[in-house]
Image (tube, rainbow, N blue to C red; front, side, top):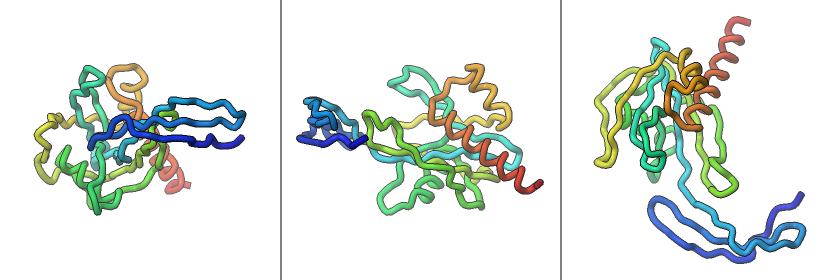
Length: 188
C-alpha cells in the first residue's frame, strides 16, 4: 500500500475552535478525489481519575451536538507552554477540584478519527486522587462532579445505564486493563 498524495489544499473555514481544510488527493491507483474535507482540531488529554476509595471521578455536562447530558472522564486541551501532563493535572483540578500526589500514568495516544480529523487524544490514569479545591470553571462550563464505583462503571457502560462517549469508555477499559496487569505483577 502507498499513501495518498495531496495535490492541492485550501482552508474553507478557520477559527480558534478548529479548521476545515479541503484537499485534492490522488490515490495510488491514479483516482483523484477533488474534495476531501479534513477537520483540524487541537490534540487533547483525558484522564481516568481514581480516589483511594476506588471511586471514579467523572464530570457530567450538557453536550450541545449530542443534545443531552453526558458522563465523561475529565478532559481538555493543554495551554501554551504546558506539557501534556501539566495540562491534564490543571484540567482535572479545574473541572473537578481533584488532584493527586502521584504523577499521571500514561496509558496511550490515539487518533480521534483519522478518516476526517487530524487530532489525537492522550489518555492518562491518576490514582489516589483527593479533593483539594472547588471547581474553577470557565464562564461557558457547567459541570457536575460525580463519583462512581470504578468496578461498577463497566457494567453501567455495557448496559447503557449511563450516557457517555467513546473516549470515556475507551479510557475506562484502558485503565482497567492497566490496573489488572499491575495487580497480577504485584501478586505474581
